[in-house]
Image 1 (cartoon, rainbow, N blue to C red):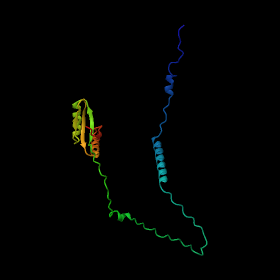
Image 2: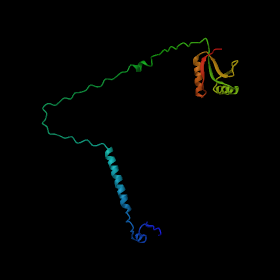
Image 3: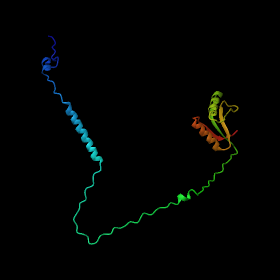
Image 4: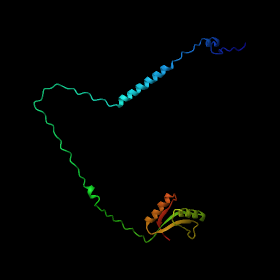
Length: 182
Protein backbone atom coordinates (compact mmCIF):
# COMPACT_ATOMS: atom_id res chain seq x y z
CA UNK A 1 0.00 0.00 0.00
CA UNK A 2 1.27 3.43 -0.90
CA UNK A 3 1.99 6.05 1.72
CA UNK A 4 -0.57 8.79 1.74
CA UNK A 5 0.13 12.32 2.77
CA UNK A 6 -2.80 13.61 4.79
CA UNK A 7 -1.40 17.14 5.20
CA UNK A 8 -3.12 19.60 2.97
CA UNK A 9 -0.88 21.39 0.64
CA UNK A 10 -1.51 25.07 0.42
CA UNK A 11 -3.63 27.24 2.62
CA UNK A 12 -7.21 26.93 1.63
CA UNK A 13 -8.79 27.84 -1.65
CA UNK A 14 -6.22 29.89 -3.43
CA UNK A 15 -8.36 30.87 -6.40
CA UNK A 16 -11.45 31.98 -4.61
CA UNK A 17 -9.83 33.71 -1.59
CA UNK A 18 -7.92 36.31 -3.57
CA UNK A 19 -11.01 37.18 -5.57
CA UNK A 20 -13.10 37.66 -2.43
CA UNK A 21 -10.62 40.00 -0.74
CA UNK A 22 -11.88 43.52 -0.78
CA UNK A 23 -9.69 46.55 -0.62
CA UNK A 24 -9.67 48.10 2.83
CA UNK A 25 -11.23 51.54 2.89
CA UNK A 26 -8.60 54.25 3.01
CA UNK A 27 -8.56 56.61 5.94
CA UNK A 28 -8.79 60.19 4.96
CA UNK A 29 -5.50 61.93 5.72
CA UNK A 30 -7.08 65.19 6.86
CA UNK A 31 -8.74 63.42 9.79
CA UNK A 32 -5.47 62.15 11.24
CA UNK A 33 -3.86 65.57 10.70
CA UNK A 34 -6.74 67.31 12.47
CA UNK A 35 -6.51 64.85 15.35
CA UNK A 36 -2.76 65.49 15.69
CA UNK A 37 -3.26 69.26 15.71
CA UNK A 38 -5.97 68.99 18.37
CA UNK A 39 -3.78 66.80 20.60
CA UNK A 40 -0.75 69.09 20.32
CA UNK A 41 -2.79 72.23 20.96
CA UNK A 42 -4.50 70.61 23.96
CA UNK A 43 -1.11 69.61 25.38
CA UNK A 44 0.23 73.13 24.83
CA UNK A 45 -2.78 74.69 26.54
CA UNK A 46 -2.31 72.37 29.52
CA UNK A 47 1.34 73.39 29.84
CA UNK A 48 0.41 77.06 29.57
CA UNK A 49 -2.15 76.81 32.36
CA UNK A 50 0.31 74.98 34.59
CA UNK A 51 3.09 77.50 34.05
CA UNK A 52 1.06 80.68 34.53
CA UNK A 53 0.43 81.93 38.03
CA UNK A 54 -3.19 81.74 39.10
CA UNK A 55 -4.86 85.03 39.82
CA UNK A 56 -5.62 85.60 43.48
CA UNK A 57 -9.31 85.34 44.29
CA UNK A 58 -11.19 88.58 44.71
CA UNK A 59 -11.50 89.55 48.35
CA UNK A 60 -14.88 88.95 49.87
CA UNK A 61 -16.31 92.15 51.19
CA UNK A 62 -18.52 91.74 54.22
CA UNK A 63 -20.76 94.47 55.30
CA UNK A 64 -19.76 95.51 58.76
CA UNK A 65 -20.86 98.21 61.06
CA UNK A 66 -18.68 101.26 61.06
CA UNK A 67 -16.12 100.94 63.79
CA UNK A 68 -16.47 103.46 66.51
CA UNK A 69 -12.74 103.44 67.14
CA UNK A 70 -10.18 103.01 64.36
CA UNK A 71 -7.40 100.58 65.19
CA UNK A 72 -3.92 101.97 65.27
CA UNK A 73 -1.27 100.07 63.38
CA UNK A 74 1.99 99.33 65.08
CA UNK A 75 4.85 101.06 63.36
CA UNK A 76 8.01 99.04 63.18
CA UNK A 77 11.29 100.84 63.81
CA UNK A 78 13.78 100.88 60.96
CA UNK A 79 16.26 98.01 61.00
CA UNK A 80 19.57 98.79 62.66
CA UNK A 81 22.48 99.45 60.39
CA UNK A 82 25.30 97.06 61.02
CA UNK A 83 28.80 98.38 61.05
CA UNK A 84 31.59 95.95 60.51
CA UNK A 85 34.85 96.84 62.12
CA UNK A 86 37.10 94.68 60.03
CA UNK A 87 36.51 96.72 56.89
CA UNK A 88 38.49 99.62 58.30
CA UNK A 89 40.97 97.56 60.33
CA UNK A 90 42.21 95.19 57.63
CA UNK A 91 44.09 97.68 55.44
CA UNK A 92 45.93 99.04 58.49
CA UNK A 93 46.87 95.71 60.01
CA UNK A 94 50.27 94.11 59.50
CA UNK A 95 50.95 90.47 60.08
CA UNK A 96 54.38 89.33 61.07
CA UNK A 97 55.37 85.82 60.17
CA UNK A 98 58.32 84.21 61.81
CA UNK A 99 59.86 81.51 59.68
CA UNK A 100 61.28 78.49 61.39
CA UNK A 101 64.99 78.24 61.31
CA UNK A 102 66.16 75.67 58.85
CA UNK A 103 68.29 73.06 60.44
CA UNK A 104 71.56 72.61 58.63
CA UNK A 105 72.56 69.00 58.92
CA UNK A 106 76.19 68.07 59.45
CA UNK A 107 75.67 65.19 57.03
CA UNK A 108 74.40 66.31 53.59
CA UNK A 109 71.37 64.77 51.86
CA UNK A 110 71.59 62.84 48.58
CA UNK A 111 68.89 61.59 46.27
CA UNK A 112 69.21 58.35 44.34
CA UNK A 113 67.08 57.97 41.21
CA UNK A 114 67.93 54.45 40.19
CA UNK A 115 70.47 51.64 40.32
CA UNK A 116 71.29 49.85 37.06
CA UNK A 117 73.33 46.84 36.00
CA UNK A 118 74.76 48.52 32.89
CA UNK A 119 76.35 51.91 32.45
CA UNK A 120 74.19 52.58 29.34
CA UNK A 121 71.01 52.37 31.43
CA UNK A 122 72.51 54.68 34.05
CA UNK A 123 73.59 57.16 31.34
CA UNK A 124 70.05 57.16 29.89
CA UNK A 125 68.58 58.00 33.31
CA UNK A 126 71.21 60.72 33.84
CA UNK A 127 70.24 62.20 30.46
CA UNK A 128 66.52 62.21 31.40
CA UNK A 129 67.37 64.06 34.61
CA UNK A 130 69.60 66.53 32.74
CA UNK A 131 66.66 67.44 30.47
CA UNK A 132 64.88 68.69 33.63
CA UNK A 133 67.78 71.05 34.39
CA UNK A 134 69.17 69.05 37.31
CA UNK A 135 72.74 67.83 37.52
CA UNK A 136 73.32 64.19 38.48
CA UNK A 137 76.25 61.78 38.83
CA UNK A 138 76.81 58.09 38.23
CA UNK A 139 78.52 56.30 41.07
CA UNK A 140 79.85 52.74 41.26
CA UNK A 141 81.10 51.34 44.53
CA UNK A 142 84.13 49.10 44.54
CA UNK A 143 83.19 45.44 44.62
CA UNK A 144 79.66 46.15 43.32
CA UNK A 145 78.27 45.69 39.83
CA UNK A 146 75.56 48.36 40.23
CA UNK A 147 75.65 51.85 38.73
CA UNK A 148 73.75 54.35 40.88
CA UNK A 149 72.36 57.66 39.57
CA UNK A 150 72.77 60.16 42.42
CA UNK A 151 71.81 63.83 42.80
CA UNK A 152 73.30 66.13 45.38
CA UNK A 153 74.68 66.63 47.95
CA UNK A 154 71.96 68.92 49.32
CA UNK A 155 72.52 71.14 52.34
CA UNK A 156 68.77 71.16 53.19
CA UNK A 157 66.27 68.37 52.80
CA UNK A 158 63.79 70.90 51.43
CA UNK A 159 66.00 71.42 48.36
CA UNK A 160 66.15 67.67 47.75
CA UNK A 161 62.36 67.41 48.06
CA UNK A 162 61.89 70.25 45.55
CA UNK A 163 64.04 68.43 42.97
CA UNK A 164 62.26 65.15 43.72
CA UNK A 165 58.87 66.74 42.99
CA UNK A 166 60.22 68.28 39.79
CA UNK A 167 61.34 64.82 38.64
CA UNK A 168 57.99 63.27 39.64
CA UNK A 169 56.15 65.79 37.46
CA UNK A 170 58.41 64.69 34.59
CA UNK A 171 57.53 61.04 35.42
CA UNK A 172 61.07 60.18 36.50
CA UNK A 173 60.51 57.90 39.48
CA UNK A 174 61.31 56.42 41.98
CA UNK A 175 63.77 58.67 43.73
CA UNK A 176 64.76 58.26 47.37
CA UNK A 177 66.32 60.84 49.69
CA UNK A 178 68.67 59.97 52.54
CA UNK A 179 71.70 61.23 54.35
CA UNK A 180 74.95 60.50 52.61
CA UNK A 181 77.08 57.82 54.22
CA UNK A 182 80.33 57.25 52.44
